[in-house]
Length: 362
Ligand SMILES: NC(=O)c1ccc[n+]([C@@H]2O[C@H](COP(=O)([O-])OP(=O)(O)OC[C@H]3O[C@@H](n4cnc5c(N)ncnc54)[C@H](O)[C@@H]3O)[C@@H](O)[C@H]2O)c1
Ligand SMILES: CC(C)[C@H](C(=O)O)[C@@H](O)C(=O)O
Ligand SMILES: [Mg+2]
Image (cartoon, rainbow, N blue to C red; front, side, top):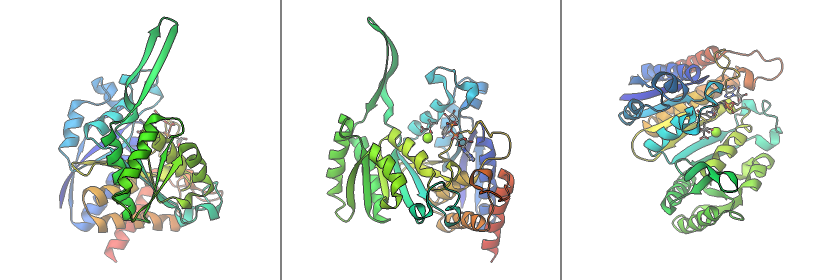
C-alpha cells in the first residue's frame, strides 16, 4: 500500500525519537512491501525560530493532505518566556484542533520484563493493561476567555473550562466503543463534587450508557482516580476524562510501565488523518545526547499502522519486536536497573529493527 505520512519532529528529543520511528517505518515498508512517503514540516520552537509562528499554515495543509501524522515533541527553555499565544505548545494544541482530533488514546501496558524497572510493587503492576481516553480539543485548554486582566481592585487572570454537550457525548461514546473491544468497563473520571462541567459530564455519561448495556460504567472523582491508579491500577479498563485531567493522569500512569518514555498515543476522530505521538515532552535535560528512549514513539508508529492504515499484522510486528527487545534485556537509561548496560537511542532502535526483520523473515 502507498501511504503519505507528515512528519513533525519538533524540538528537543523530538528529532531523535522521530528518526528512530522513521527507521522502523522504513523496515515495515521493506518487509511488508508498502511504500511510505514522508513529508517533513515544522511545528513548535523550530517553527517559531524559522517562520515566526509555532504552527505555519503550510504544516496544517500538509497534515490535512496526508494519511497520518507522526509527531516528536515541542517546547523547551529557549521559548519559555514567550507570551502564551506564541509558545511552541500552542502549535501542538493548534494542530490537534485544526484536525479536530478530539479523542486521544493513551494505552498503558506494563511489560512483564519491566516490572522491576518501576518503583511500584510487582504485584500491583503485573498485568496492567488500561486505556486512557482523553478529550483533546476542548475543556480547560481551549475554553475562552483565557486572559490576564486589569481590574479596579488589582490584576486578575482567568482560564475557562468550557464544553459543548456534544463534545462530551462523542468522547464518552468513543470510550464505550473501545471498552466493547476490551474488558467492557468504563471509568468516567470527573470532579462532579465541585465543577458544573463535571456534573453535566456525569449526566451525559449516564445517558450514553443506555446505548451500551453490555458495558459497565462507574464514576470516579479525579483525586481518588489519581490515588487508585497507584493503589490498584488493575481495576481499570477504559478511563475517560476531560482534557487536563487526562494529561495529568496519563503522565502518572506512565510510571506503571516504568517510564514516561514508554507511553505512545493516538489522536483520532474517525475521519481524516490521525496524529501519533509519544506522551512525553522534549526532555531538554537529555536532548541531543542520544539518550532518549525511542520506544514510546516506536509504539506510536504501531498505533499509526493499526488505527490509520488498518495494518494489523504490521502493527503486531512492531509491538512484538518491542516486547522481545525488552525480554532480551536491552534498556535505555530511563528503564535500566542497576548493573544493566544502557543503550543509546540509536542502539535501541537498531535492536527493534533487528527483531522486526527476524520475525518477518522467519
Ligand atoms: N507532546 C509534547 O510535545 C509535550 C509533552 C509534554 C511536555 N512538552 C514540553 O516539553 C518541555 C519539557 O517538559 P517537561 O520536562 O515537563 O516534560 P518531559 O516529558 O519533556 O520530561 C519529563 C522527564 O521525563 C524524561 N523523559 C521524557 N521523555 C523521555 C524519553 N523518551 N526517554 C527518557 N526520558 C524521558 C525527561 O528527561 C525528564 O526528566 C516543555 O516545554 C513542555 O511544554 C511537550
Ligand atoms: C505540551 C502540552 C501542550 C501537551 C498537553 O498538555 O496536551 C503535553 O503535555 C501532552 O501530554 O501531550
Ligand atoms: Mg502531557
